[in-house]
Image (cartoon, rainbow, N blue to C red; front, top):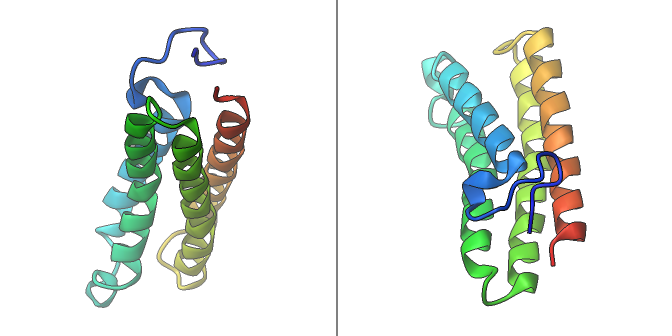
Length: 127
């Protein structure tokens, strides 16, 4: 299998362009959420850190199982899509509560929409 964007073979989950994007934004979310008020560190901030990282973790876990079952990998991709959609809800809360500004919210919202789109494409194209 190759990554359609670059034509390079995919040997590990780290070769997937969607993994790279999801990982980059999860680092951004993590760093910014550490600046949320203390009262949110075990609530909203913790939730968005976990949800953003679950996209990457599920891709990695599913990729590891794909040699035995393509259907199993696709199931983990679907879980990752759910986490990307979940992130759009959590970041809306972050914006509405004043923890991130509108530009940050729009940037993250757009990136999570693109990640979900890429994951859907991956699920459809994976053999």
